Image 1 (cartoon, rainbow, N blue to C red):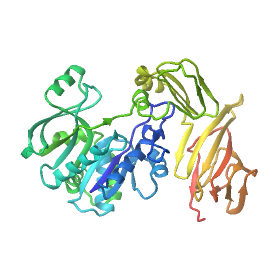
Image 2 (cartoon, one colour; image 1 turned 120 degrees about the vertical axis):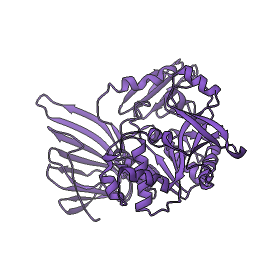
Image 3 (tube, rainbow, N blue to C red; image 1 turned 45 degrees about the horizontal axis):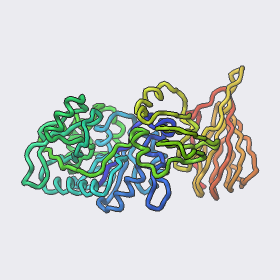
Image 4 (cartoon, rainbow, N blue to C red; image 1 turned 90 degrees about the vertical axis):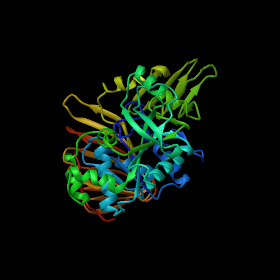
Length: 446
């Protein structure tokens, strides 16, 4: 069995902790069994491994999320990146092509496609085993997991079942309904419909046959280079709703989409994280503070307060689902990013009367990791190392750096740094044009 985890989203619903590069599934707020904090995607991968249902995991995502996935899950899990964002059908088609043509998996291999961030329990993963077995036993070519709805919702698609296949709790699918209004949702539930949880099982050959209808080739590199030829459409519309042989297996356990602050805070083990002071009279208030400055709460009621380098949120919990509407109005670069080598946060920006700009970052590089050998054409940089030890390269000349060292890097100078121990430094960029795109990278062998 092969698992394809779908990771997407722009991360506005949990602003300011989420942004365009750190979507909700990457925020480390959930408590792991060892007491440490883990993200939603880390939790799902841990649960998959603990239940032992899969031989291999592959993540299908956008290029902008590649580094943070590698940083959180490690380099042993393959990451298949879209050349451009197109929707779930092209993403699944590309990941399936990777398994078929790059990994050389058998056409009979059972493929499970699922979201990377459901908040759920062990029974969910046992149901994944059941939908895989249903495909293996030729119950249907495409088998879905149906979530037993706990209330009428317009946020989810619905799967309407008909006959139970051989009384095994596996149902043929009558039809699909995409995100209905509330009245229709109530009617669907009365008919025994399930929420569509976005979990699908099929044989690899089933999907590669569909891929071939759009792009006739048997090489992964060509499929990726011709990615724009896939229709920009969801897997539900392009595959599930057109399928001639489709079944659904119900799951009735705990399942939540932690997509708003209200639903997420219900699952947090502490009411405060970070530098927070809260009096005993405060009720149903959660505070997450990623800043160094303290937050003090006196007599607060039903609030979520979140602070990061991207901004500060103060919201009534019951209104928190409206955040995206207002966050979409905020147009600025992400102020925190995880990369495969570590992380950085923007601590200050300034623009002067003559158009000259400065941007100050704090970077942390993991021991043994390095940033790429690179050059900038439009900015100078000053690096001040405040902790750890590393190796610096300036125009092919190496030196050892440590706490207290300051280095000036003029535009046009090639540079890189590798951490011997975890390395922390302050970077001050200055120039008339400061952009992440102002970078040219080169190969360098440490």
